[in-house]
Length: 100
Image (tube, rainbow, N blue to C red; front, side, top):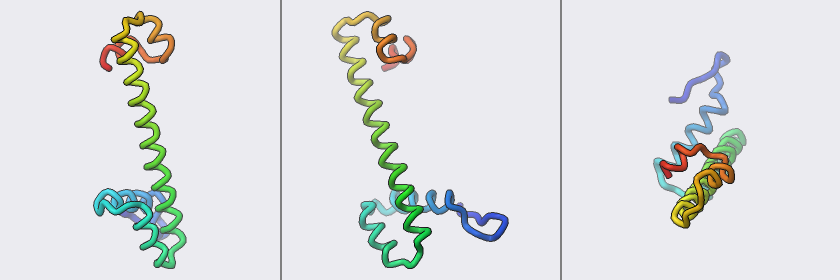
């Protein structure tokens, strides 16, 4: 829900949240949403959307990195690598590794 700050201005955080919602709700690719925003005269909206897109891209990268690490851990476990070595190499707890 978009709220205004104490001066009656919509906050940057709310604009970013709205842009993320638009992306997910419409399934439009980010470049299409950007083209629509470019027809708008609002530089604030464009900047907020670009910041939101960067956040989503970085989140996707982090999820990919994590999944790659999980696949490597599964492979190490399958290959019979000792748990102590996997813990030391990954920095994860033994409990977390057992869950993977």
